[in-house]
Amino acid sequence: MWSLVNNLEAWLNAHIAHDALIAIPALFVALLIPIAFFLMERQDLYGFDKNVILDKIIIARISIPLVVLASIALVFDSSILATLLCALLLIAVIVVLVRVYKWMTAVEVLKHKNTYKQDMRRRFIRSIKNETEKVDTWAIILNDENLMEKNQRGIVAEFIVAVRSLEDGKNRYPKSNLCGLMSRNVNKIDFSDVNSYEDLVTFSITYFEEMRSARITNKATKNKDHRVSYPSHYQMELALNLLKLALDKKINDIFDYLYFSSIKKYLASGNVDEASFSREFLPSYINIVKGNEGYDAKTLWQELSDWVITKELLSSQSSWSKTIALLNAYMSSVGNQTRLGMNITRHEAEVVDAITEQLLPNINVSFWFDIITFYNSGWGLDEGEDSLHGQIRGHVSRRREFGLFNALGGTGYWVDDEEERLKAYREELERQDGETIFILGLVYPWLRNPVEIKKVIKQIQVIQKEKLFEAESNELRRLESLLGRFEKIKAYTDNMIAEQNKKKTPSKKS
Image 1 (cartoon, rainbow, N blue to C red):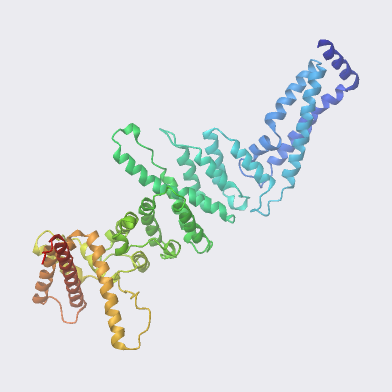
Image 2: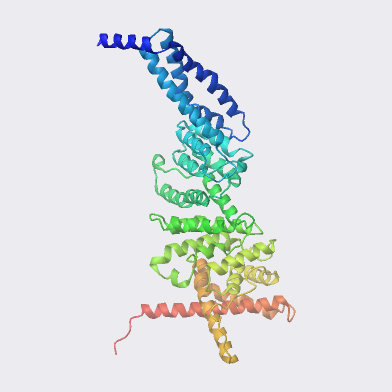
């Protein structure tokens, strides 16, 4: 064995020029190090591209140790080891030179095309294992003021991989930090690669169901140590900022479709509770639309047309959970905040009307808001007749913002005979009124209490006799309209109770 080594050593000494071996480490130091500094001085780089150049182009982690080891082998005149190390170093130099050429010639004018530079960047990001370094690198990427001017293909995919690999813990919040960074800077991302937009939406909207599921689980868990962690609120912020981009027609008309198609795919993926998702998501959607003049409130129902509330759906066990979740979401974001005399913009009132018409397609919107705004008055129904008297007076004395128009959805056809046409209108209104009263009775149980309804009717009649309002005044018309509403509610409730009593009473055998 030793003789073979000695023979190899002698052959190498005879045939390998030591000067050539010495030149290889010198070549690396003399040529590639200046090239590295040259590449780092370019102005078209991300803030972390210097790290990419050293790690992926110059391959510093491999090349520099080889230079050191080859130099040591040459100093100790170990021909075999020096030759082997120099051969490896020469291969590394060739690889580095090829990568330097590719890096320098990569054209990034087409910012949405996958380039060699972008591939190296993604490899570098993917290779980061330390959480702090990972968050710091993403801070450099997303806080870059000129992010929109640089190639961004693949960035979103790497972000999602990175953020899913992290978990928040006690006194450490790497996942929240990354979500917060993306949320604050998402408007800088160029989503010409629409798949990246869809992927980011799909990631962010998981917040809504996860939040509700965690809340339900923790509410039922007595042991604090066994409670599950809540998703980061920055993830919700990201989902809503993406929604703002989707509904901003100045950016791209296709984003709203992409956003809601992502929701449909997510809900259809299985193991997703659509009721929980809609209960959490819908109020956020409504608040965003209300707060922005240029947004179209009907966009959601163009893409998610089955998000509706009807008597039929509320009466079915299979559809109950989803429909009641939508109703609760509507009431928490619209119903409970809808009052007469509010200082709101015309746009906000239009959003409330539009969402109500889309979500509750079979109701009488004017009837609906007459009762909703009456209930939301500052007066209480159970504080005596004087309180109820004042509540009614205040209700009919205030201006209207909601439900000023009601569409007759079931009469979209023309009937030549006027009497038949009016009959069709009456039948449609009766159908709408019945559905309206049914759903209102679920929201406000007192509407199914005949005693409470009679109190309201009695006080309206008292006010009419007192002649507090001038003839033909708006207040008097509203009072008469309110009386008609409650008389319909009374008739509906009386009929419902009679039907229930009839079912309870056993029929006599003849």
